[in-house]
Every structure is written in structure tokens, then in C-alpha cells.
Length: 334
Length: 296
Image 1 (cartoon, chains in turn brown, orange):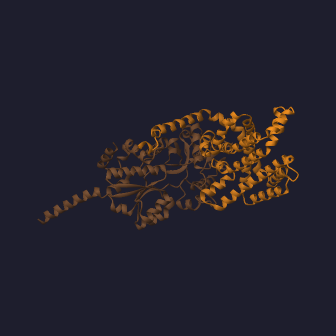
Image 2 (cartoon, chains in turn blue, yellow):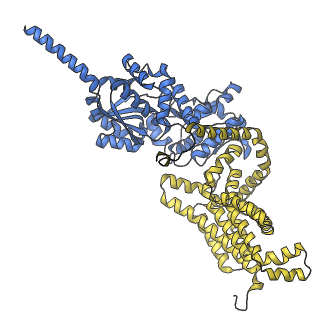
Image 3 (cartoon, chains in turn green, purple):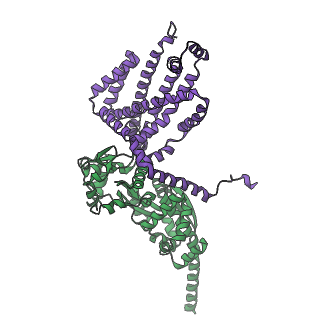
């Protein structure tokens, strides 16, 4: 009798818990940061969590530093899907150590990073060029329009951290002596305009860019291997990123750290299946690039792009969610 | 009524298609004609590169001497010459010499180009009300349209660098000289023109011997405004890759370096004041004959 009661009670509790597990995904706030890929990811997360796991999701606007500060001090929002963590490295480590924040997903976007790029057709026309070192030997292929005897390398505009890094790497790789000019594009618009103009004309172009971006996807740019190993974070932070670096050393770019960060309260109070989805979702570079190009071409916001992604890229997102959730989501899209 | 809640705008898809259509049309235009247009501007670009290199490479005492001589020739005033020398010495001392030389190079080319294009255009406008009615809206557009709106197509056609920078400066700085030349000539007293006709002047004599000399105050106001607007565009030009004082100003704005921004900004102001005072004094000397006994 006791065993029976216990068994029934256990079954009852299990039933209640599984019922409760679906309903336990309550309110979730997600940061919708102010750039295209972040907007897109936040909206995809919103639809999947709402339709697939029954959460009530609210999107909160944000940016890297402001969102992190808010999560660290106030525990709001619950999730930051695309946090570029290099700039908040120290306080983030402290928060993770104290348990108030969790690093859910260390690689939500594959193929993300910064570096030096050339158009795909340059690599096709010159198969001997495989790394940055090869490019540096050939300034004649990338003539600077104001001084055709030199090669043009287009750097970063003022105010971007990469401007200083590019200056130091330009010195480290001894590019001025090898016949290069570091061209300052002046602004983000100048950088995009210079790259767009060169690629539309079919000219060879060499400069800085980062991924994931619509520009990389639209113009089919390829990020080059630097041909030298990474010098280590200590030297990178102490010298290469600093203006006062006396003797910059050749190095590849540091790996960009993008993480999905969640607060402790989200982990404790919400459906573990929802958390598992957040932990596991990984956007392949091609899919993310395609969506960014879609957003740029159609001037689409995050919500429209998210719906387009869920409708047309089932093979990608159905791998992140269980079968039941996938069916619920597909039904809601119709 | 529902109709009045939201403006009945064009359908979203149609709007996107329209915008994409314009973008593609421009891209095709750029692909077909870009090389030819770049080729057209190449001589101007090589001249500007050479001129900038010349100013930057010349030894600084010689440059200051040249500026002092030009100031004297223009203004004939010891005060202005001394002010010029002191300003340039200060600019050099605070480490802004090369940037200032680059800015002087592009702004002088831009100013001469604008004045060379603007005064004839203003004269044309003054001859005919039809021309004035056609050109005035174009000048309005040139002065008010945000710079990056026309810079985007210019950068797509010509890339970043000196020529797009020059185009940006000229589009903004051309209207004042055109409008004021037109105004100055139209304001010339009708009776004076009648008298000139009565004396048997032909069109050229009327224009160069009567109208332009009497319109000089307005024309020089136009020159002054053109110089000021050209220097005001220095920072925007540096946003599309033009070297000069605009570059450190941009850096200062992006990184919140107050002192750097202030110093370079004041260097731009110093250049503007020098250019302006010298040209104004030159203009006044040209009109000395009009002044009454007490320099009225």
C-alpha cells in the first residue's frame, strides 16, 4: 500500500513537473543590440522561445557595454545573444566566478572575426596568393590611385579599436618599406564605399574588414590567413592594441570572442529545454552571411529577417530544437 | 476616420523595389562610365597630389615667408602680416604643420575652382531671369542636401581621396559666390547702366568696366563666404579619406580627446580668418575709388 501510494505520488509529481516544465518558461527578456546580426539573432530567439517553448519574451534595446553593465548590476535582460566580450573581459570573468552570469554559448556564430580581406576573384586570378605575407610581397597588384607606384592597404577609420591595431601591424610587417601606403578611409561610409567601388569594378582590393557583416557576404570577400601565429593575448593587449607600442611584432589577429551570456535567474527559473536551445544554437557563417545580405538588400528589420530565416533555412534551425518544438514553430509560421 | 490615422503611403514592397531599382541603375551607370569619369578627373588629381607634396616638402621658413608676402600683397597691412606669421608659427609649434599644409593645398585649389566657376555662372544668372529661375533651385539643393547623400554616389564612382573631397567642398562652397555675384550685378543702378549705354559702351565694356566694378562689394562677400564654407567642409572631406586638419578633428570627436579637437579646430579657424582678412582687404583696395573723403 505504501509502495503504491509512493508510486502514485511519484507519478503524480512527475506529471505535474512535466506539465510545469512547459509552463515554467515564464517571462524572458532578451537584449536586441543595435547592429544587424544582433537584431536578427534576438528576433530568432524570441520566436523560437515563444512558439517552441511557451515563454513570454520581451526584447530590450541594447549595446555591448550598456547591456553588459545592466546584466551585471541589475540582472536585466536575461539573455544577451551576441556579446563581443573582449571589451568586458575582466568584469565578465568576475561575474561568472561569482555565479551571477553564465557563459551559455561560446560560439553562437561560426566564422566570426576581424582581419585583412581580399575579393574572391583576386584569389582565383592569383592562386599563388594564400596568406597575408604573400599579399604583402605584391603591392603592384593593388595600386594606390593617388600614387600608382605604391600598393594601397585600406585601414580603419578614427574611433575604431582596429585603427591602432592596423597601424601597429602595418609597422610590424614592415609594409611601408615594401611599397605600401596605409590609406585612412575617414569613416565607416568611406571604408564601405572604397570596398564597394573596387569590387564593383573588378579591381583588386586589400583592406580590413570583419565578419559577420552584409558587406563581406554581398561582395564575397575572403578573410586571409595571416601566415604567422597569434602572439598571445598578453602581448596583444599590452602592445599591438596600444598607441605607445614601441616595437610591434607580426601576429595574426586575436580570435574574436562572441558569447551568449545569461543571468543566473534565467538559468534557475526557466525551462531547461529553453536553456539547452540557447546553449546549442550555432549559426554557420554562410547562413548568417546570407541573412545579413537579405537584411541589407531588402532593408528588412530583425523581425522580418527572423521570419525569413525560419521559413527558408529549416535545415539549420531544426537541428537546435527538439522535434516537438520544431513542429510548434513551423505551425505558427503559417 | 482610418484614412487619417496613418498616411496612405506607397506599399512597402513597392517602396523597396523602387529603392532597389534606383540602386541597381546607379550601379550599372557606375560600372559603365566609372573608368571614363575617373580618367576625366585624373589630371586634377595628379595636380592636387603634386601641389600637396610641394607644400608639405617645402622648408617651413620659406612657406611662412611666402604666406607673409601673399598677405602683404593682398592686404598691405602690417597688422595682418604679423598676425599671419604668428599664426603659422603657432600652428607649427603645436605639431600641426603637415596637416595644415595639406588643408591649405586642397582648400586653395577648391577656392580657386569655385571662384573660377562661380563668378561666370553668377554673371550668366544675372543676364536672364529664366537662367536664374533654373539655377536657383539647384543652388538650394547644393547647399542643403546632407553631404553624405551625394558623397555616397561620388565615392562609388571615384573612390575615396582628394577628388571626391574636392567635389564635396565645391558643391557646398559654390552657391554663395554664384548667388552674390548674381545679386551684385543685378543691384547695379539702372541709371548708371543707361549712362554707360548713352556713352556707347558695348556689352563687354558694360560688364567689365561698369557692372563688375560696381558689384565688387557683393562679389567679395561671396568670396568670403565661399572660403568660409570650404574650410567648414574640411572635416567632412576627411570623412572620405582626405588628409589634413580634418583627420585629427575626427579622431578627437570619435575618441573624445578635447584638447586635440580644440587645437586643430582653432588651426582651421586661423586659416579661415587669414584667408578672409587678406581677401577682404584686397577687395577694399580694389574699391578705394568709391570711398569718400573720410574712408566712408
